[in-house]
Length: 252
Image 1 (tube, one colour):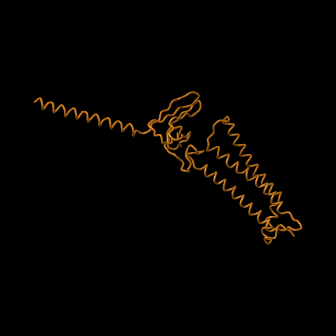
Image 2 (spheres, helix red, strand yellow; image 1 turned 120 degrees about the vertical axis):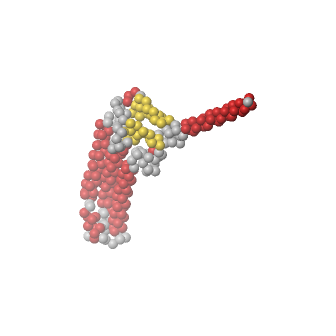
Image 3 (cartoon, one colour; image 1 turned 30 degrees about the vertical axis):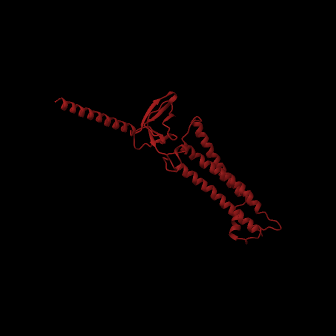
């Protein structure tokens, strides 16, 4: 009987030890695989500290906020972390309410630019606007270069005179080119002044990157196009000067 009791106790002890080992493994695995958590601490001057727990050192987090838990209210990106960053301090103003969330994504808006290097990591529209404005500037330069080349070639006798081109050359003279350039330049200056005014209304503080770039990119584009138009008109006029050896388009 004693041997049987000892054997039973041994089996019970081994079973209990095995159960404890299994329980430890399960708890340890659950701790490792636990989803990241978010803790928020109010600081002074309307700032909050946001900490992410159970995060990996390879994670990229974007912190977003919205005023209410309503599906019609979009989340707004307020800050982006570098690789492995889990602590954030953001200024939300003296009085605020709302909800925060953290997204684990390297490139949240899919524009092939990492969040920590992206001016607007959640919205690809600003990047599209920048590319569109770049295309306008490049297109203007290519058209102007084509005009310069043809005027020079006709004036030097490398190409025959083109009646349609000659009429266009006479219509877009120096004065009209300068006038158009100044109008475009003035439009860019007005948009820039509006951007400064909006910044002043915010107390020259932090602005939404998306909204700010939507104001500044078109303004900068118009300023560049205006200046290019004015000086291209001067250069075109110089190329169209008639001499004893040169005969520009439309010259009799």
